[in-house]
Length: 321
Image (cartoon, rainbow, N blue to C red; front, side):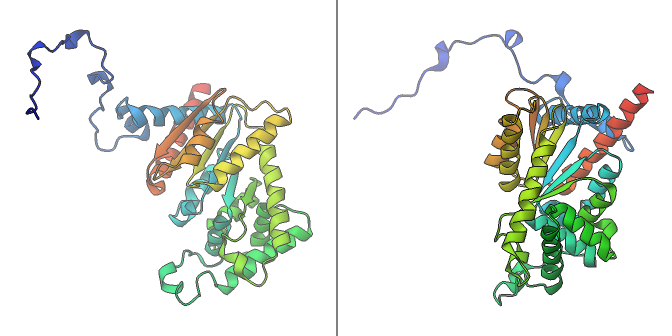
């Protein structure tokens, strides 16, 4: 066997750097930051690359949708509640910027516990071995009472739970996403996968009531999506369930003749997942609009989005005046 011979690079073909296209120039670089700068200044100082370009563009599209009176829908997993972001979302609802909320079943568990006692999220490792995980008496009783009452009245789950929390006048209703939304008249839909939530293991759980109220909410969600043209849908922290629900709602709306073709979508999560990227960012906007995939921790990215959006909305209002 012959010994391998290294290649001789002396005849390598080269070209001039001066004539080559380059994806990055110094004009794209970030700008130095000064103490006390505004949110607008911060966004303007970002490098004109990747998320530094996409994030301000997304903020601009959301602000334009709001100014045009179009909906900004938010679908979210329970982790958003658990990291303490309810006050920011409630403020956006109060300002008329967020026009609807879609939750999974875990979301109503944590939000109800917040309303009742001002805290949530047990340490699973401490209680799973004894079989006590999810067995909090009040959580199971209150959530299921709201669902069962709602089913008897032909209501959707989100509206039923909102009415129930307000009627019970819990001490932390002001911090509850669902109670606040109901107070403000903002639709909340809840999309349940039976068996995934701790309230399903409680004696008061009624599968028929859970199914009826959640299915009613799916129909309502489809109605909201049918009006999404020119608006936006944000998926925050739901890796599977809500991206699937959104895609099914979109196809229902289009099947029934609603023009939902040009709108903005964005997925916010701390890791990249297949379904949000495919079912929220790419497929729905293939025929118009634009989708964005924003990777980062909710407790940082959602406040940044809200701050940037409020600043941009104020700017547009000033331009309009």
